[in-house]
Length: 160
Image (cartoon, rainbow, N blue to C red):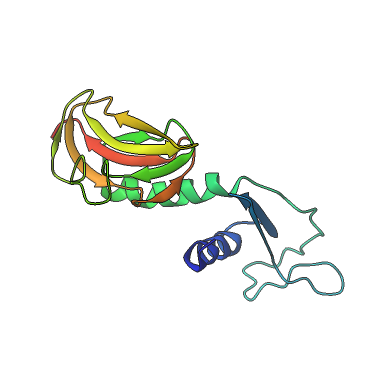
């Protein structure tokens, strides 16, 4: 897991009422916990209220869901449109070959059924086609990086 992703997990831990995050992805496992003092309470750097904190059992949450929600909220403020999501888990590719032109670029007019990308899963190349027509506003996924099921890949403005 890249340090950028680990830092995102730490930010999620700090910004939500979560004391521990554990994620297992692609055969690797990472666990991040808040520091606890001897009484078992989380040590907060800033206390915003006078309410005493009780010992809370660990909460295990779907980290990808929180991260997607957090990122999606910031993106929705900036970009409106239809999200094209990954139908399978795999590796996202913008072109059919490393030296080939990408299927689509930001600003292109997209039609229904037009190939947008490839997701490689178990050495099978799955062409992902557009479900809507419109202008491509954003490519959310990164080329040659893993994508999760139902992760947003593209945002298309149907009015464009």
